[in-house]
Image (cartoon, one colour):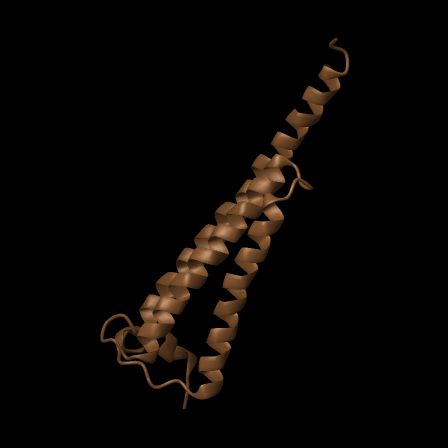
Length: 133
C-alpha cells in the first residue's frame, strides 16, 4: 500500500524504481512532448513583431525553458525506460522538477519586475520623442 510517509524516505528516492505501466509511460511521453512542441510554438510566436521587445524576450525565455526541460525530461525518461542504474532513480526527476520550479520563478520574476519597468520606460521615451523634431 502506498503511503505519503514513504515519500520522505531515502529508500523511495534512491532505491530501484519499479517498472512503469503503459499508462504512466504514455502520460510521460505526452507531457514531455507537449513541453517540446509548446516550446517550439512559443518560440515562433516570440520571433514575430506583434509583441514588444520585453514581452518577446519573456516569451523567448519561456520557450527556452520548455525546450530545454522537455529535452532533459525525455533523456531522463529514456534512462528510466532502460533501467540505467543511477540515472533512472526518482531523485533525478526530483532534481529536474526543482530545476523547472526555479526556472519558472525566475521567469515570473522577469514578468513581474522587469517587463513593467521596460514598458514604462518605452512609453516615456515615446512621449518625449513626439516633442523632438
